[in-house]
Length: 455
Image 1 (cartoon, rainbow, N blue to C red):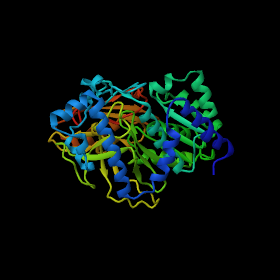
Image 2: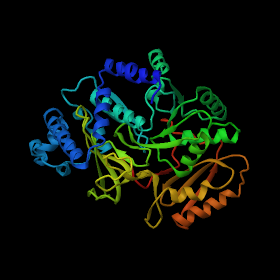
Image 3: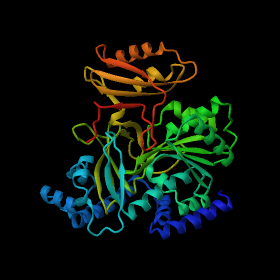
């Protein structure tokens, strides 16, 4: 049961904060906590009702989608099943860049401008309305409560988005103090700052952590290497998101902080798509989001097969995301869900990372970047590394050495990568003082300029 202050913070302070901002987060969260126990048929009925409403508004208010539907002969009143969404074209990042203004609903109010860097570094600019914000907040809030925690429990957030960092004005700081949330910038991971982060976490004694898996695992490793105990703080769970979670990162975080790691999947563009429950399943926020898995030719794949994740977000009527290609790879679980937690929400059986986390061998074979990561990550003395596939013929490896680094490691890496990419591929190993994170604060171990080019 939550403590008295947590109950006040969640039920009064945060609820009032959301109401003042015009968000329906509290009501939506309560609704989600009821619908999570529904069966598959009842959830699909809800999805169909919401899909019909989204498509009708898109036709009536969004110039881009009126044009698309008229050109394709799609009558919004004819949507009778969830599969009818397949008549719509995929929404790509290139389409959003080309038609940003025409994707805004004419009746939208108070649209907020957002952007993501994208794997190519070219910003993707889009807009979000209050309905979308309220539903996304509610989805994350519900998942937090799955773990016996709530808004108002002490939380450390290790994040790097310029949106969050730049918003730390007086009002935001007071709100975070009242809700017992402390923000640490994920793009400032120098040894001196890591020392400070460890001290602040120990002093704050968070009940939960939230951040990038790369950042939290780096803090955990630094604490362990410097002899700082972190498993006596009462931390119950570390929520990680926005990057692929690797097994060694999960082990590092759990072993150091003495808590579970709960993976979350989503993005600023696509919304909060799935969250991990204590039983280990990645439950999709099915009340708000329809997930399709498609192959490279755009054909919809059945459950159990790997492909690109495509989402339709029902709460995006102000700026519709209908069949949006995320660039991420995954596998849908079977229907109905059989998770031991009892929730009827469908499951992402496997989340494999971004298309640019894959690499292409010289002979055209596509493989996950883990095939290359495994060559490097167990070599002693390497603090951090990044693999950049420049072309089919050239791959670079950036190494940030640590204590005990042996220069002979370079030849081991070259041999290992050539064995996987092809003997004729040029592999350059570059030892650098520091490998920076991306402007967002994320860190990518693999970056391919061959596989999964940004659409």
